Length: 459
Figure 1 (tube, helix red, strand yellow):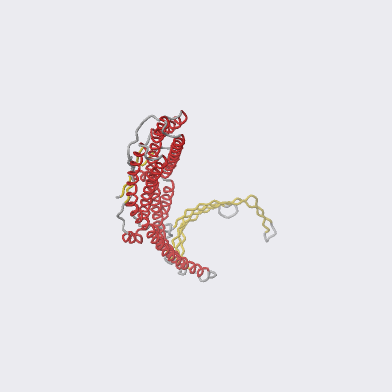
Figure 2 (spheres, one colour):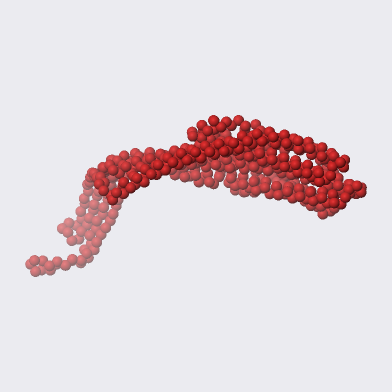
């Protein structure tokens, strides 16, 4: 495993700087600021602990999990139309009428305010015994939709883990960069002290002293900007974990980035077609489209529906020969039918469903090709960064040794401040290159694990 961790190159003497009051105040405030930052209550968690919290609290993931629950609730035989329906209905109605009758014998008969009422109670059931296997097809489609929802949850989890791991290692990288910049400030401060001594003894110039002050201020400013980078990264980590307080100081427990050099392209490629979530989702969508075509075809079959019920009616009348009436009993019926013509809409829907199924095949092949292309591209980045790690590790060792020699020569007056600054810049650049290469190698590793479908078992 490749590992990079900041190690101080050589101790800098801790002496009181002979600065003017303003510069001394500035440096003191800067040191106090960083001391305050380090003194804030901090909690250190491993990447696995970060992931556990995020899987429990992340808002986007919780939304997707709720959608998965909905899909699970929809997967029932009743929702597929395979079970009978049973309704209980009650109704009450009445009317108030006035009647004028002219009888054949010449007499007239009239009634006013005739009030009749009817109360109905009915239990009615219906069951589609055959509908061209539509219920069975719909039930199978609901199962695939449920599986698709579970796959969407897995995709969301994989994306969350990849984002969280990337930010976790980004914070580690930037922390190492922060340490490197702190060391640069220490060197610049020591250089300023030496220049002040030379100036007071008359062996140094005002120009070199001012140049040393400018260098220290520039390094201190860059250190302050790096602190902002760390703070922004910490907030992003808190956001991914959906912490109630985004200012909570939860930090990575690791101090180094470990890169696994053992990923093999052939094994990863085999896993892409078997485990890649996007490829599996494309397969799943094709199945759903197949069932959609089958549902349309089922409408060409005849259907058979059975209905039955039991009812009770109570009626009152002020105009009939009876005052009230009770009636009860059952009813039943069978309906058989088939669609003969619907304006060729069924043919149109079949044609569109076949085209959609063809599109699903094309999307599947495109997804496979895109995943393979991403795998190949990222693996090349991964392999190249592993090779560069060896080279940059050697460069950093040489740069560190060069700084030690240069600083000893500078103390003896055999090296100018400008030359020391160039050596110092070369060291910072070497450290930054190595940190960047190692971080990019780790990001490539995470991407390869996600593309091959291994990320859930690796974190």
